[in-house]
Image (cartoon, rainbow, N blue to C red; front, top):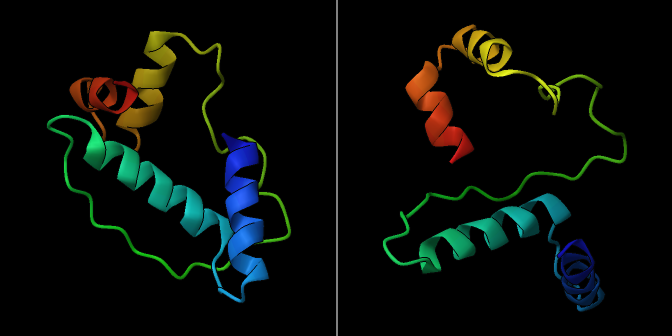
Length: 89
């Protein structure tokens, strides 16, 4: 999927459109959600500038974290266990 977004990004940029990769990916996710049966409508804001530097390390939870660790991590961010389940899907 990343390769397909890169193709679209290159195509639009080549035609003079000032579109960022982050906005393109966000819009793709929005379209995918909305086209699912009973998918929610999501307000999308565009216009972010892509960064040439990577995000700092350790911003995401460890992929091998156990449930108790994840619940504690998200509780610190005011997201309870039910909200975490909704995020995970």
